[in-house]
Image (tube, rainbow, N blue to C red):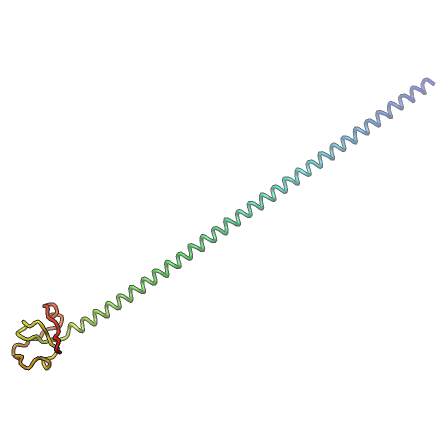
Length: 161
């Protein structure tokens, strides 16, 4: 009987030990699942942070791209306006040159006319024809010169012609 009591006591001790071992094993399993949950949560947090960072980077890149596009558009507009300004200046310059050439042509045809000056060239006026001169003019003292020469020597067109 003593052996039975010892066996019973030993069985009880074993049972208690096994129960305690099982309980401690469950706590280890609980600890492992808790640490696994913590790792999973930290991985989720890292993933969400990296997604947020990539979104921020993507947003900043798109902002940079839009800024560059805006700058290039402004450069193109300034180039176009500069080209238009240069073209307008060129057109205005060519028009002024052609106008100056026309005026020079008109002045040249005006100054190339033959005019008549009385008094041997000493008169202050000139005429385009001898018929409009006063009747008392001495026709022998009339000289011919170009209108540009007459103007250069200080003569003017007659008011009576």
